[in-house]
Each structure stands twice: as C-alpha cells, then as structure tokens.
Image 1 (tube, rainbow, N blue to C red):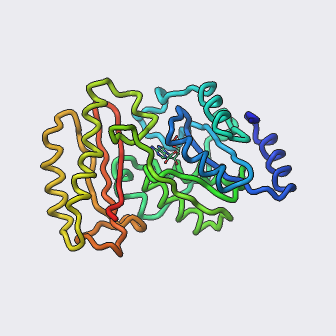
Image 2 (image 1 turned 90 degrees about the horizontal axis):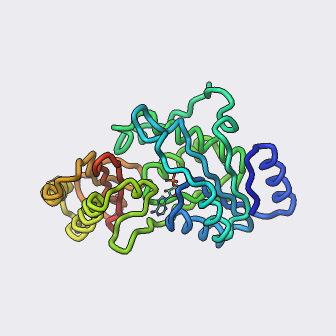
Image 3 (image 1 turned 60 degrees about the horizontal axis):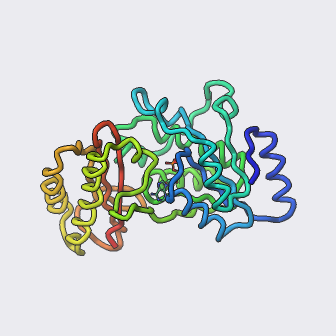
Length: 281
Ligand code: AMP
C-alpha cells in the first residue's frame, strides 16, 4: 500500500491507474477505523481494480464546540488496518494540503441538509459536500463507497453527484454493528462502560419500532411508542427520532413500502453524539 500525503503524487498515481484502464473504488474516512470502515474497503475491492482510501478529519464539517480537536487520530494504526484489508493507496493529507487557504467557494446542499442532523448541526453538510467534492475531483473514482449509517450524508452526496455531474457511481453499504447491536462508530471510543450500555437503547428503539411498523401504521403512533420506549434510558438525551422517506428524507405520516421508510435516531449519551437508522422493509 502506498501512503500519499501530497496531491501531486496522488494525481500522478491516479493517471497511471487510468492509463492501465483500471477502475478505482474510493472510500473516504476520517480515520479511527473500525470494522464498518473495513467493510467498505472490502466492497470496494470486490467491485473495483484499485482501492483508494482517504483519512482526513475535515475541519469544515465540525461546528463550534464540536469534537474536531479531540476527534481520535491514529494514522499509523489505521494505515496498518487498511494495508491488511488490501487497500492500494492511502491518501493522508495534512489540513494545509486540502485547505491551503480558507475555502472561498462553498457547497450548499439543498433542503435535505436542513432536516434530521442538519437541524442541530448547521453547516455540517455544507462542509461534508465541500470535502467530498474536492476528494472526488482529486481521486476521480469510478465508485464511491459510503455507509448507510450516515443516511443523510448518502442522500446529500447522491444529490451532489447528480446535480454536479460527477462521473462516479455511489455504492451505499450496510451498517456494521457490534455483537450487541450497537452501530460501529469512531465516536464509540468516547463512551464510558456505563454510557456504552446506555447507547444500546438507540438500536433497541429502532428494532422495537421496526417490528411495529407494519404497512398502514401511523408514524405518529410509532413515534409516541418510541419516545415512551427510551424514556427509561436516563443517560440518553434524544436529538431526534423520525420516520422519513429513505430516498428524499421527507417525513411520512403512514408506513407504506413504496415510501421506502427509514427510522432514524440521534442523541447524546453523555457528551457523545450518536446516530443510527434502519430501513423498515
Ligand atoms: P467516518 O470516518 O465516520 O467519516 O466514516 C467514513 C465512512 O464509513 C462513511 O461512509 C460512513 O458512513 C462509513 N461508516 C461509519 N460507520 C460505519 C458502520 N458502522 N458500518 C458501515 N459503514 C460505516
């Protein structure tokens, strides 16, 4: 595996790969890798000739008071994991390589950025859109692999790709979970053992509601049931519990398979913000 820190070298390697008519699968990450990230690498390996991963903790997508400074950074360990998983190139740029000056151009996603996580994280998806647009231009992959766990991110990036005509196919990969159902996340390492236990309520609530979400069920009744369900988890401060159309993120009133309903939840356990979601069907 080649570790590349400079754009010029990355571009050189990409040109070589393209000259050999090899397809490129790209997995962007912020590091602190876990089996969820590695599942994206595996999917990329299955689908493409060459796999490029990036590790970049993107300052543009963190709001004031969020965890940019304390976000876990472990480049050597991550590189080892990526190497063992069969990655061909790791792009590991410094902040100055990606942002040699404060960005003058913004990426402004549409209304889908204002719901769910966008309500409490203003500007977050604009920052995500900017860095993904830059990375897609730098890597010019044939396939982009993103995790379903960040549902809203997948919807916004799909719109970015379509509206700006990036010649890349988006592949959304399933959420990988710990044995007890907790969605894997780099932020799980912030949790104390007690908080780790409390965090299980997110997935438990999703699974509970999923069993009740039969076609024709009203969303309001399901959400009331959900709020009752996690009332008994005192360590959880819910941000939202919503049932939305998984393609448009529009809120739903009734569960109908053709609306592709997804139950999405976010909340703080202690100081750690966690998200999770599940498709109903
Ligand atoms: P991050 O490093 O958190 O920015 O995540 C990088 C990519 O990994 C994103 O596309 C995430 O959606 C994906 N990802 C994060 N956690 C998981 C998980 N538990 N299962 C599958 N993919 C994940």
